Length: 250
Image (cartoon, rainbow, N blue to C red):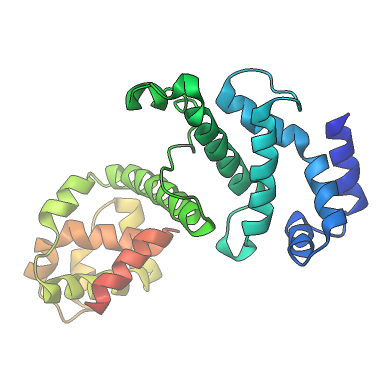
């Protein structure tokens, strides 16, 4: 029934997104605030239950903590930070419930390791500092960065390369790195050279030599690094491209 009420609430407000609803609440619409909290009670109970590992009813103290945390998430939420309200609220609810459980007298004597068992099935509940939207965004970015690196590592394998090799063989001097970047940018800006790289899985050194003012010896010495940078330019790698930008600015 609660879930049905939630769906009816959203249908009634179909022209207004959840973020827009939250913005109105933050502007002082308490009636809308009460409606939103009531409609999302099943979501709150589910988040609380995932921490407590048992069924949670509205009479449980933990559920009250979850309600307070959900309301806190509404007040702190900022859509410009890039995360959804529900993702942010889920983390905040779990964090507050865990803190509540830890403060209970029966848990006061638990060792740190034992207390951590309360959190082991909550993947986002390892946030130990005071939670904020900025902090949550940093965590999400770290997760996305790891996923991007994993994906890029798979592409490198197709070219017989690995991250360890790139770390060991990347140019040590700034000028050498910039020259490698120039060669990579020249390659990706030329459709034919880019095609050769992707199809042959090797650097078209002879063709590049005719297009850049960099010696063949330098290109060959930095071959693996140039391939990796070229693949980053070609692919949709937000964080790795930021790294390249940093290298070019140094």
